[in-house]
Length: 99
Image (cartoon, rainbow, N blue to C red; front, side, top):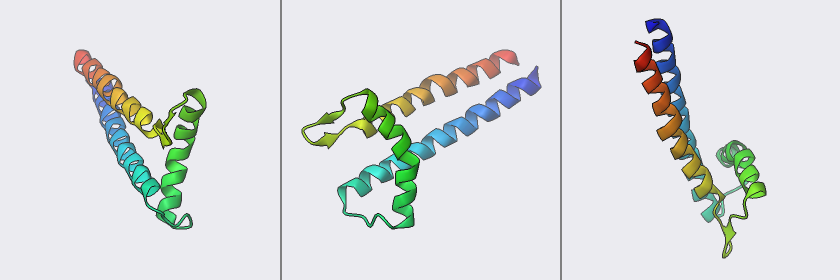
């Protein structure tokens, strides 16, 4: 069972890294939304391509625009934090229970 436990630990760690990277991508997206960035810049295009599918889905489901501010990045950020604290920790606990 320790092999399965090690596999779950590795998956939980990778998921944690991916979620942290997405938080930084989301922060980059918020920063470029406040400055007038060139939309043809490859970094700007990457940030839009990485975040638009998630942010658009949140915008469809929730009216998260308040006083002209788009609050969908805040909702996504809270969801990512929830996944880190719930899903990743649950995977770690499951793996340790299997040992």
